[in-house]
Length: 354
Image 1 (cartoon, rainbow, N blue to C red):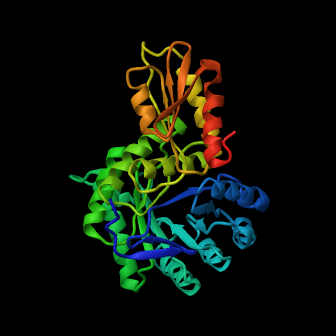
Image 2: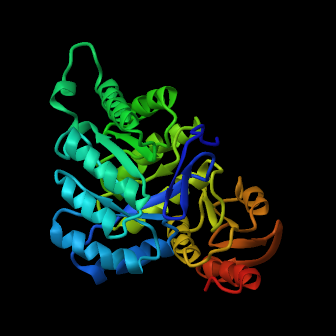
């Protein structure tokens, strides 16, 4: 499941494409003009494993703030610019590690060329980003063409534009709020060009629905070798985007590190309060950076087997449960003590977890 894109760009020191590991990125939802709030959020994103941060640059004040943000940011910062080419030029000069533009709304070919010239001078790449909701008029409802195909054709038009200018330091994205359209468009793009691909299901929704849509859309593409960097677009705290992105990569074996929780779905056989126990274990595992596998199982049918397979585990019984460590049952404790006992064992190995 390694990306098949041969070309590579660098966002700061972070490689994208060309066989580099798939990266996780997010976008701040602060007012970019508020430098401290934006930097605080970028630091939070970095703490949860974000590798590239994107910020909106809607006006001159935001462009001016960007210079202070890029100087102090722990992550490379991509400037997201729409409608005003001059803002993209200013962002490049302000230290942005990359630009995100939609060539169709930046003001025509001459202004696109001006942005490319600024990016070339600064030595930074551009993301050519097209969303289903922002297609050019002539691509919105052509006869005999799907919206996914319209996305593809629009992106390829822009790719050709960049290539004619002799600029190849770019990646592309084709996003839709429809999972199916996102999958279809990106599979076709992967067949027809060799530039790095940024994946995401745009406007996916809240943490619950958006997380599912993103996992299906992004995950199915990554499983087929398509995609070099991802953003899970969720309504809410962008930290949740980063956490979801890492889980998608981990589920496909594209990323390791950090704990992995296995818990059964509950059924009539469960004799402990499995949901509350699993949620508390998940909460406390978030503070552990070690790559361990923890099983929380509710009954004796699959519980002991799964608990033995994991590094640490709980196998529930009637109002009590067994604590497992590296395949061996360590002790039996009442249900109310299971979480504490589990983390006592985890702490012996990790030095923390409490």
